[in-house]
Image 1 (cartoon, rainbow, N blue to C red):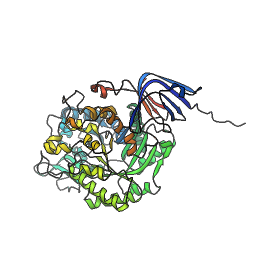
Image 2 (spheres, rainbow, N blue to C red; image 1 turned 90 degrees about the horizontal axis):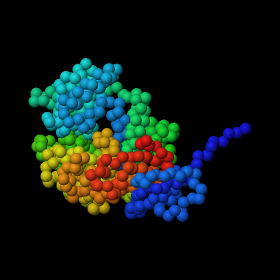
Image 3 (tube, one colour; image 1 turned 90 degrees about the vertical axis):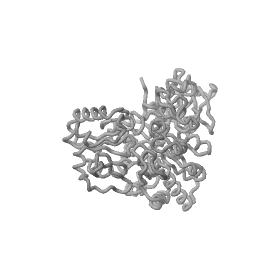
Length: 539
């Protein structure tokens, strides 16, 4: 006697809601949707199109439905580890930061190292980099290593520096800086590539810890309405972990993963060729993430002219143009999209030059190369994004998080080419929006709010920060849905609710298009659906 597996009912009807989706660049409003085997077969408002005998009907109680949101630049495992390590995001004083570190260390005596991230000295009254001496007051007997909010600087205690052999004689690596006191002694803060001097000494995370971090991250991602993530830099081990989760049907979001660099991990992953449509379109690996500079908050972003508030400092270029071009060409030759981190105007200029050479050499047409962040761009370089068909992968919350210090860093003139979303859109450049979590919060409604208002959550400044760069609600949503999908070569399977695509959508507690703009960031996700399967419910 043979047993056959029960066939899951597959023809679903969703009704009683107000839905919005993009179709052929137009915004469609609808109130009925039919799915079959996880894919959309009808969206619209014509009840005669409904099947006579669906296997299941879902009444969405008059709520608002949007396509599942896509974060075009984030760090999934990093988000997971913020739940296992000490999380210092948003703390507004050095004393409170130190208290949280001390409490965490006391509560976790078994840890060999105290690890964490999220500190931001620009939020503190002191507004200066902290020191190892500060940390020694609360944790002296074990090493402490804490990444800054942007991930481009770190703060260590004396024990961590001792274990890493850091001294007055330590030499800064290319693309890195050791912050020193007036006598030349390291203070405990390390910028960009100098962070490797300590990170090489930290014990590797166990497989169990990394799996736990991924599971925790996926839970949060679903809860905020993200059905797609572009993971900006993975290792070979994470590549294997994602495939394993995909094989076990544990992925509750679609991951478009970028290989971190063009070194050994790239060689190992690329030996199997581009990975597309894996695990029912839940995993793609066909791009590479490169870095060209640091971040603005730690003054590591590479600038053409010195920092306004630090006239001897130009920031840090990670590679010269020839080196960067060589890496791009290695990836392009194997068919990979290249996505390069560039925040300062010098870094953006070098990246655009390298893209131009790479595109010309291989005669690339639909390359979809991206500049990740494109944060401060020289006005003369902005049109090059259009002429080279480069995608601007930008994070709206960076503007509202940075507005307290960005103009101090680079001055009034250069700020005109910074966080210039509308300028890019107006010239026809595709803008894919993300958050860069855990640098920023994972909630995409924070990003939609920042894009539309350019204000903080208290509504300041009154008219928005450089309001000429605001996006309309439609433009902002497009950048978090179909345009983000297009930036990851996934526009045929997700990003909008259209016939033949996966039914990835969210149900939210208010109408994004009609509520007062001050409410956008407060939007709550009630349900998240991936391929017509509910992966999150607020109840």
